[in-house]
Amino acid sequence: MTAILTRRSEHFLTDPAPSDDELTYLLRGAAAAPDHGMLKPWRWILLRGADRAVLGTCLTDEHPGQAAGRWVADMLRAPLLAALVFAPQPNGKVPEWEQLAATSAMTHSLMLLLHARGYGSVWHTDRLAESTAARALLRISPTERLLGGLSMGTPDPDTKRPRWPLEDVSHRISVFRAGEPASVKHV
Image 1 (cartoon, rainbow, N blue to C red):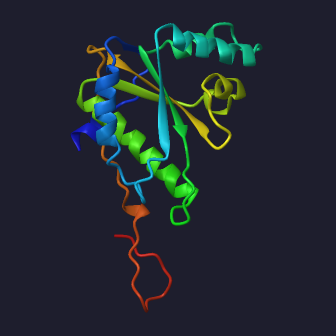
Image 2: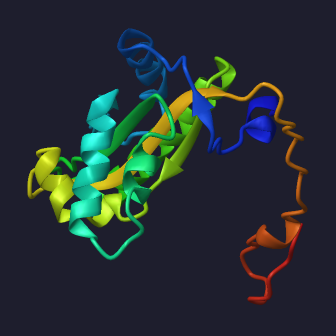
Image 3: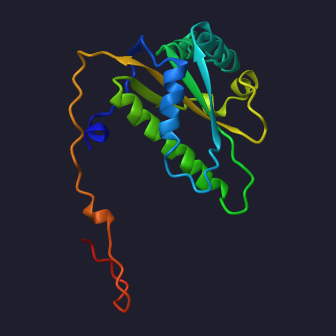
């Protein structure tokens, strides 16, 4: 509960970020998220250093009317940018929507694991997820979808991060009882 209530989207991240080996280890844990058929319909493309600026320049070139340098700055906001590629697997038992749900569950698990290790992360889609230029640059196949990027690094230790309050969600829960009228009975 603590990890869930204290994790935040961290927009200002510095070194260090997880190494490739450490991220691979964390992904092994995140891959334990619910995944019907254990298809792992995803892959990650890691960008560090100047390669993040190359992606930002690609987005700037695709959207020349935007403020100059905005996309480069966005891609450089953390020492590690990981592009998430949804790679649905042909499978008669597991529909594509369920594979997308598994990919989302894995990503959230990764964010919680990063948080537990003292790293911060922020998920961003922006135009990255819809960019044909980024798809070409990152060699995304026609059967795959670029879902966005996860920026990772170390958050500022001096930033206050209060716990999220537990909200009342009882109005989102109902109990079905066979033989009773179709009214919703909240718990």
